[in-house]
Image 1 (cartoon, one colour):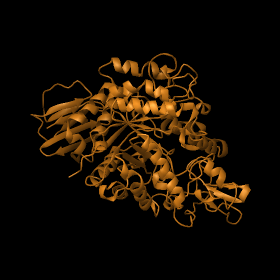
Image 2 (tube, helix red, strand yellow):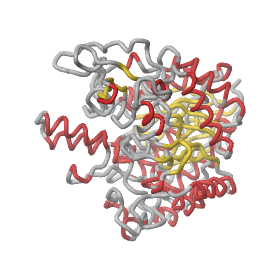
Image 3 (cartoon, rainbow, N blue to C red):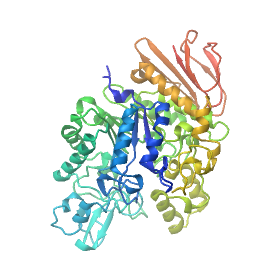
Image 4 (cartoon, rainbow, N blue to C red):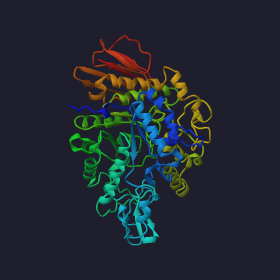
Length: 558
């Protein structure tokens, strides 16, 4: 039997502070802006806020490059503002989890400034330094944002490792002193009263000894070295040590962002008796609209059967002893209604369907800011309007350096670029969607007069109120949290249906991932069933065969 925990019953809301709400008109969202909107979150009904990084940072990668782990970024406010925000959240019964970014720091962090001074500096070993090989980099790995993972440093005639941007040098977790610094910093925030951590690429912290070359690919100078740093040799040891030294002393929630994690590994990371993490973010379902063996910019349409197979596998593998996180969106992913819904004619209906499909599964659901409004992807006319380092590096490499077709590359950006999620939250129909009185740091989506929170709150049939109802149902029915999961109609190309069962209670969840009508034939008798939620006005008349309309979702309690 699954043990009951508060974080299993919670619904989490992710705030990307730069784009959430600007209180002082400088065009950048801030902590006081978050405080202004806490009643909105309370009305939505969420239990936890996951706050993307607000620490001091030069913002090479929007705060995921931290120069001081114990201070707040000036653009976002002060520590006093942050403390007020935490108190105001707790007053409303909302918990706060902070982003923990400890695979790398900023190159402007004091540790790194010291580390690069000399080979015998006491901080040298806080980072990964190596001599060059045959007049070139120490190995052939490619960085996530393009180019080599190595940056040459003249001062000591060595290279430092950076799996991401060259302003994000990797921390050396082999060094026990560095690990202790991280644990002390975690306690600093936990003692201030936060309720847990979302851990950025945490399964990258253990690298294989010797950092061997990745498998060569013809015509490519740099290649993936993933097998040497994803789920590395000491990862479980490090996480168990972190748990023992820090997390076990607090009643908190942890979620690890883990690219390239399998369900078998997911069980190891989240198994309760193993004392590592509560849950992981896995990416398998996020890669299903990418051509096999290619990176995310090489698009292919989603085959719903792949999505069912992937999510179903995670549901069944983590059924006993592990725990799933459920998400469609975050600050790195495009807007789900544009991605796998219909953001034109059926925007509201398909946004509700996608929410139903996700929130009725077993696991802790995450809502990304604006998702509850059905916010959509952005199409900027010019690459100049984009801000994301990953997007800009890819465009430069493929269009400027390799001469590829800019129209095709822009199509990939419209579909998958990270800035799709980063346009400001649309609060009302006034200028800049009520996000700022100044010039926003990134342009607002021009559909804000149609899609905004003020309008959604006033309309009882809005996506917002639908999300609110899904959250209420979760608090009302234990079967939604703790029931077992069984996939139905696995081979159907457009219907995603499953059951949840706890004791003698069963829910039937039926969703239509298409703009087509489908006859649905229930193998479960619905004559005495109760319709808990639907995104259409559905008569209470119960029949075992019914027509599913475009993008329809229904949940029956049997």
